[in-house]
Amino acid sequence: MVASLQIPVRIWIEKHDIESKNPDACDVIVKMEDDTLHTAVFVTLPYLARQMDLSYEVGKGIPYNPPVHYAALETPHIIVPNLDRDTIEDTIDNLLALDIFENLFTRVTEDDGAEVAPSRTGKLATKEVAAVVLNEVLMVTEDTPTTVA
Image (cartoon, rainbow, N blue to C red):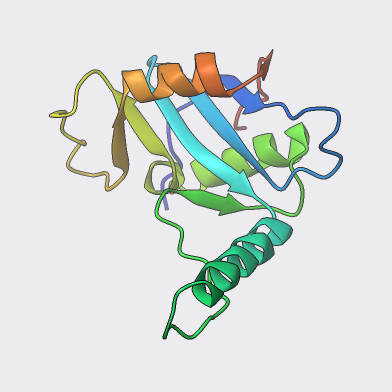
């Protein structure tokens, strides 16, 4: 297996309000050496449980529909034990070392018609999407990440 040659130069991690003592999900944006941006949602097991409970409650409100606990995740979600910066950065390092980072993160591009390199199967999003996440959704911390050894 050949490790990825990409090196992250900056990682933005969503910060939660002080009132949110146990956040269970956060958006993460990674900027690579080649200036590409990648985004994913990091979640914990309580997040999945909460999503299943929400599905059950919605199902109870629909006539003739059996309520059921399930979670259907459409966007890339990476499940981790906690949302500590070290956990997220170490996970990113591992995904890069295993050469599966681009399969799990959505690459942000200039326009909707951009092509993914033939060797990659990652999803795409536009820079406008990342800008909204960075500027309007996230209250972020900016640190230079540790690099893959």
